[in-house]
Structure formats: structure tokens, C-alpha cells
Amino acid sequence: MSILIDKNTRVLVQGLTGKTGTFHTEQALAYHGTQMVGGIHPKKGGETWEGSKGEKLPIFASVAEGRDRTGATASVVYVPPAGAAEAIIEAIEAEIPLIVC
Image (cartoon, rainbow, N blue to C red):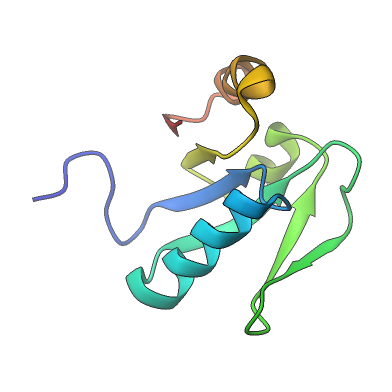
């Protein structure tokens, strides 16, 4: 039984454009039906991420922008350890109800 997430959970990916973020996002889209709704990268906002099988997600410059544009209800953090705390704080400040790191 799922308590924190369900089929309606809309997930932003902080660190989507990196190797780990790309791998796990492709897996979630291919095998789990997760609603991955966009990625976050401060320098790549406005671009589109494309996975190895042609999957496409918008990239936003901030978590707040991503939340506003997608209705995201969760964020998963795939950023290097040195930036993880800052990424989590950004998601908290954007009032994302569930943050997974």
C-alpha cells in the first residue's frame, strides 16, 4: 500500500540532466509508469531533456517554476552531494510536499 505516493503523484527531477538523474528517470518512465513531469537545472531552464528512447521532459530553471508549470507534488534529488542540501532547501521553499533524496 502506498502512503506517500500514488499514480497521481507528479514528480520533478532535480539533476535530471546528469548521468544518475537520466538513468533513474528513464527507468521510472519505462517500467514504473511514474509521472515524471520535468527537470530542474538553473542554467538549462527552457530546454528539453531527451532520453535514450526519445522520452522528452521540459527543464525549468527553478523548482518553483517547475511546480507552477506542472502541478508537481514531489521532487526527487539526483544532484552531487555538495549540492544536495541546497537542492532540498529549494524544494522546501517551493513548498513541494514530498522530497526524496
